[in-house]
Length: 175
Image (cartoon, rainbow, N blue to C red; front, side, top):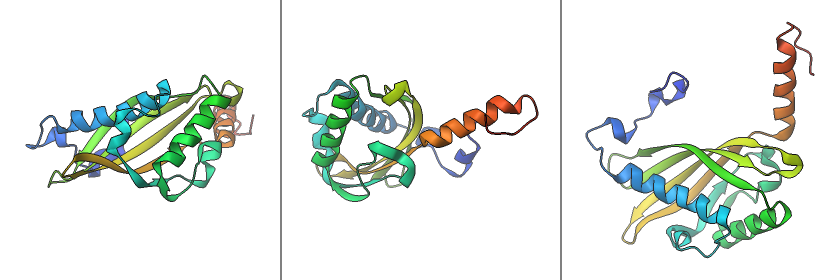
């Protein structure tokens, strides 16, 4: 466990157990391939056959214009929203900077936590976020059934930056 990630102490990483095998790498690769296909504009990529047509997409209220909804959604709606986003912002990419996979003891469910840097946002902004993709093993292989996304709100980012810049003087006044 990394000292910079103390919240991981309650989770079991399959790589740290006797269950260690190629499963974490396989699931992480599937998850990264989803972002790779989206970034390259291959919206008909075969990786999307591994994403359930109806799956849960959950985002907090402050995720802004990339929030395409909550609850059960059509995969095509999410792809259409990404197309619209990249048409309006051709430089937009979701860059996976780190990932961790957690698998249930029966090896039937897996959660992949992706640390993502969103680049090419309007105004040249960049934002960090976390996405958790839930994968379920079925007869046809692994299917992505849920996406949970957490992103920093632009206003919050500005506030945090303002506090950090002014904190060196000892004053905690919004900068």
